[in-house]
Amino acid sequence: MFGIVIVAHGGLAKEYLSALQHVVGELDGVRAISVGPEDSLTSRQDEICAATEAVNTGDGVVLVTDLIGSTPSNLAMKACTRREMDVIYGANMPLLVQLAKSRHRDRRVAVNAALDTGRRCLDARRSPATPPTPKAPARVA
Image 1 (cartoon, rainbow, N blue to C red):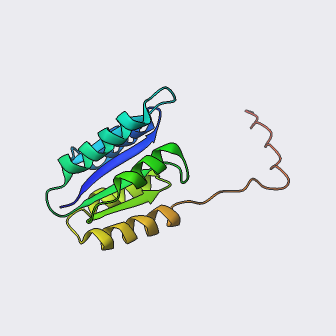
Image 2 (cartoon, rainbow, N blue to C red):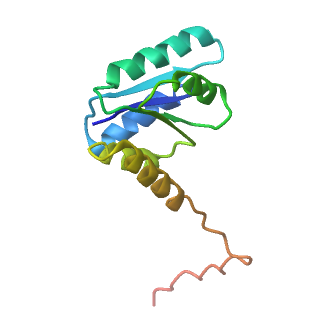
């Protein structure tokens, strides 16, 4: 079973982990690293590396970040210099749930399934061009 490290801005990583455990239950081998505006990048880099080592039981680690090209993603990329490690950018809850439920699978297969789910569950509902006319309240005779 591969480990998961979530790295994101502010408290988002910890909130993602909390919400993920609300959906799928308690998780071993999963860590959340928050990156704040006042943080030392070196300290966060070291924390990410330590977290990846702590959750790697031999099947590798998937780092999940919130925003491509951001500081958390750049820090994760630097931590991803070891073998058996992948980075996913653009976290969302469906992606995280799929990844957590796929931890028994081959890591690369699980990453592809998580990416597919994350993309498939991203959509929008458009409002109608003309809002519906409100119905008159029913009259009681």
